[in-house]
Length: 432
Ligand code: DSN
Image 1 (spheres, helix red, strand yellow):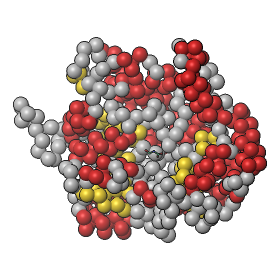
Image 2 (cartoon, rainbow, N blue to C red):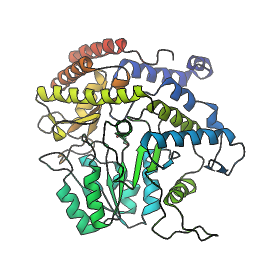
Image 3 (tube, rainbow, N blue to C red):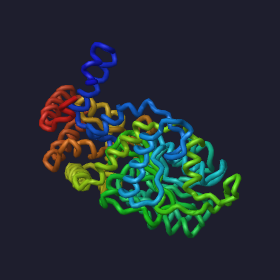
Image 4 (cartoon, rainbow, N blue to C red):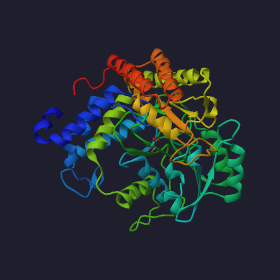
């Protein structure tokens, strides 16, 4: 069925979907965690596989009729293992949060100590924010970035690790513009006997294509989402370079055999925290992993990084402060602390002009998380549309004009018209 047929069947929802498709087509999507999937990923995510219950794992399900969904999950697993060169992969987590929960529930007991990057310094809710399950269940110690460099302060990480002896150290985040320092984290983890988990949700596509260093052999666990730079359907993922016998002496009930860590992770995801896997999404993950294995995806990720670097330079040229002074990934964080305009006002003004970004805390922010002093900008989605250096220069110009005149209606209207003209040149989902 084509979406246009929904016009008669469900006119209300049809209007909503058309509205969103129009928004995606006519605006510049600069949210660093968003992207546009291929039509193949979209089709499979909307396929008959949504009908199937398949609790369990391929070959050992709690339901009959799993022949074909088993194939889909096996394909997804095999492709992601090849993509990230790892022995273990669980493709069932519904989201990045559940992937992180899967590792925490396997490795930690409530009250255990977890060392993660502060949300305001670029971390993620699930890295120990007090309003998240991670902050409520565990004794969280947070590290941050250095005020001088905007990069992780390893003196602080080491000091906190020695003092608090975390069982698990988490590296990575959702607003860290620099490459994750896996090797440096491993040195600290080894020194204090902690396990190391990397959350590569943001740079996953860059990691897969060699545009960001690999977490192997440094990290015990790697979690990710599948919909950011990886450009797949919305979902999560857990990986280990090698499976290994669990060090906590957990045994299989009947045989007494010591379980592999992978078996424990599988059990934590299902039945521990999830029931039926989303087989349509797992199949769409398989499609996306297949796409990511192709040379075109490597080229795309290279362009994502080039575009972010170009955009960063254009903002620096115009006198903006960037957290860490720039980027080596797909995202940059403009620090507006020295300006009157807040992240909240900037986000709204840019949206009115057809540019979608999100307000974001910057390190040592004096404004609240609802107001913030930063905006986060990412290049994955505009790069998928085919934009390059020339368009990055235009985008920097659009943003600058709006930020210099956030209340100006005519500025917003003028920029919006130019944004729409640019978007027309880079069509999106033409066949929908
Ligand atoms: N909300 C995601 C992001 O925007 O980075 C992280 O989960």
